[in-house]
Length: 199
Image 1 (cartoon, rainbow, N blue to C red):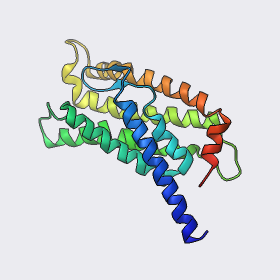
Image 2 (cartoon, one colour; image 1 turned 90 degrees about the vertical axis):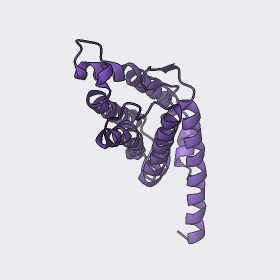
Image 3 (cartoon, rainbow, N blue to C red; image 1 turned 90 degrees about the horizontal axis):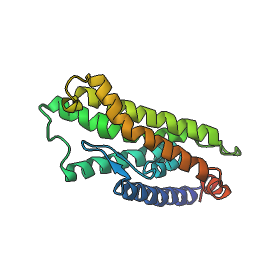
Image 4 (cartoon, one colour; image 1 turned 60 degrees about the horizontal axis):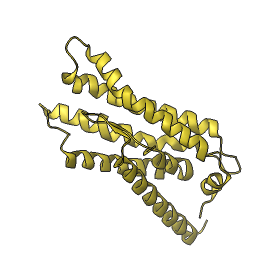
């Protein structure tokens, strides 16, 4: 493949990735339901980021997901609901990594379900991959829920149960919404053509 063709493909991937990152960010600003101490149910705001990995592979998927993670962190800082109760540098680092950088950057691994050249898109593989990645995101939030945010647990409720219930309240609906919409979209022949089209 010539340099000009590679450059054209890179520009194409960059432009489409930027569009999907912007779409994901807009959707994150329009929550269906917002939890009192962070976290929300959206209209599949993670789906555009997941889509990038499926279409362009690991490099663009992880890079775009990391960019989206940074945007989410900045968005939370602007809202003022991050670090307000941080008591040490260790807590701040744990929050940054396990509430933002890791759980959102991991979405770029949706590239695992990218079809190989000549293969058809497998909707089952896509949905399983999406579900696993969102489960990993839930586990990340669960960790900070136990380690940091358990201070808001009702009296008499254990930290593990509180984090499970709190994070499950928004992550389970988010997973269901994302998989339902993805299942509908990824069975479309137009979406399959978009994924397999390289330039």
